[in-house]
Image 1 (cartoon, rainbow, N blue to C red):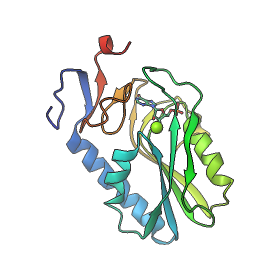
Image 2 (tube, rainbow, N blue to C red; image 1 turned 135 degrees about the horizontal axis):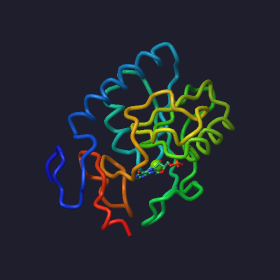
Image 3 (cartoon, rainbow, N blue to C red; image 1 turned 90 degrees about the horizontal axis):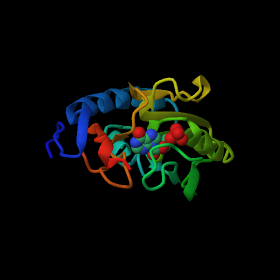
Length: 184
Ligand code: IMP
Ligand code: MG
């Protein structure tokens, strides 16, 4: 497996690891600036998919921050079309009166973001924003559009850099499209 993309199960690489790194740096700069005057800050990674993105992002943020966690599931097992997302591990961490940044790997229908946002808002945070590494073009309503988006992509099922198919491929350092014969 090379960091820029060759892997026998991957048909096409969309984002090699150096492109991801450069974009995460840019997002971190925007987020660091926004929250310089908005404290206290809590980052809320939505597990499992966002753990790689969140780990890279927080190490580029100089801000004082806390981490809260929640785990959801929208594509259980071998599904490549979303089911209604459900909470697998409930929201844990400090939210009330804090500025909360929800961090997810990818925005597809937006149902996961909407579910998590509602749970966060019920805890009376000082503010809520969201950051995703990827957003599928034209799928979620404009109202659910995250404040920070790494890359817009077509409506494809992608893996790598935390994103999985049947819980595999999260460890790939790049993001790509699986060979279709493997998705069944
Ligand atoms: P949504 O609720 O339809 O927006 O789906 C978002 C969630 O589904 C994300 O948090 C991901 O974990 C997962 N997901 C959506 N699209 C993909 C994909 O292309 N590959 C892997 N996981 C995905
Ligand atoms: Mg997810």
